[in-house]
Length: 63
Image 1 (cartoon, rainbow, N blue to C red):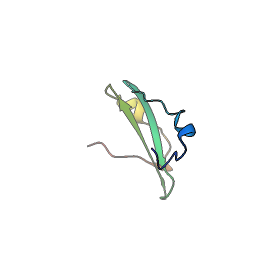
Image 2 (spheres, helix red, strand yellow; image 1 turned 60 degrees about the horizontal axis):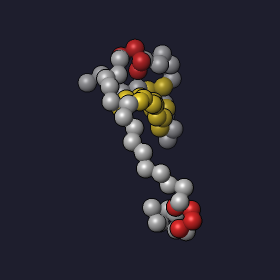
Image 3 (tube, rainbow, N blue to C red; image 1 turned 90 degrees about the vertical axis):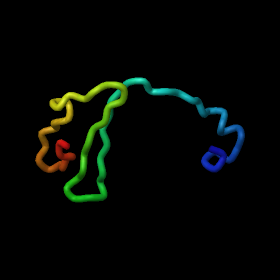
């Protein structure tokens, strides 16, 4: 973190935390069509939660 926050004063804002459960999504805008996928932490994701319904956005295929 010293490389990212070289001044000691700026490092005082850093706080360690842990995420026990949650979900989110990410996009890769560097490819066409846009790649979109979701992730979960701490629990299994339901298939209907992953289905976004937008044909212009490529999603990971079921494995």
